[in-house]
Length: 488
View (cartoon, rainbow, N blue to C red):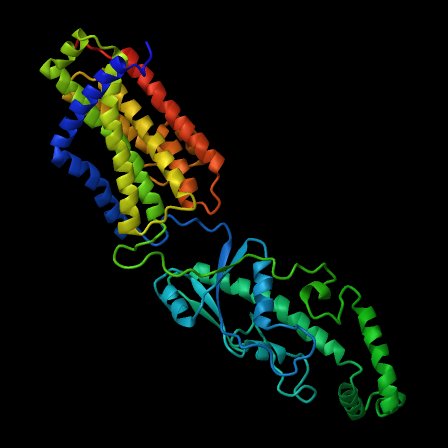
């Protein structure tokens, strides 16, 4: 007999209508069923910290406020861009470091004072001018020159670099400072060496050297004479440069970058990891739009879809207690018709619950529906099929309200704990994540994670998750059909 035959479908529709009236009659239970997940999401959304739901940094984050106004007038051919950008490129191209650009000092001070950043590096407006003035030469040769080095490395104060630090995070702050010191050393020292070496042969430099030589009483007379002759100065400059370069042949003393100084291949410019700061996570008292709601809403949507196990179980128990189950058995109805008649209204409730929570998440909590919002409906539907299949299985086995409460609650809580509904799946070990896929919850959560938190969702994987969820539902329904006791 075809299941599409009118005589087959009519009893199913009749049973569905009867159970739908029973479900709609208990408005208080329905309100609790729909409002309880919202209350839990609301409480957790307010109480959880800023970091919940955000991906843990796999790289050391260096936060920077760049107020640098650029190079001084007539800076020469090198570096061709602000020194702050040179430092940012060096940092971002360093392995395991990610640079975060914060827009202003006020936001940086707030982040540090609230403990959200252990430290923030600030390039003051004249940073590039200060770096450009750094020199090994004395002021008599290079007026207004700056010596940026001191006992412990590079003096941030001399370069007009400010490091805001959270004193409650001393270790992380010290690590940030040392990373900045090393980067500044790699940037500033080659520039100073190359600039000094360029001066060898320069007329002003050679003249001053001649004056210094003439002041010495223990230098060869011919050398003194050569230093006093402008023509010889010009000829001696390249010779002195070449001689010094031969003495330090492991280095390129005319270089102005660390890679060139050490005769290494330079790093690609602007290829490092630099990200813009996106502001605080969420706004207002509810923290609307916070990333945490992209996790909390689908988590409780999935968990409460399976809470309908209890509702369906109690419907079956009521039928048995009132004796209507035996009358159904006496009627010309098959097990399949009885199961479908019970399944359809509960499935409708589950679908409505899923859509309601997603809509409430959008309106109340400001969550995003991702790049493929229509696919969320497919995940809601497949999750509901799996949940109602399990509900029918429990209902077909349980004989009393107590058994429904024990079987249903145990299944709901154990499966929720295994799958990651009670704790974020990101905190679970990899082995446990794989093991959790024995539960339909885990597949539903994986699908929601792809659609709601991934910048490039894997749609093929979402489809696989939906197919697996429907497979769970069908397997549960087959077991329910086999185990259904119509005599009890």
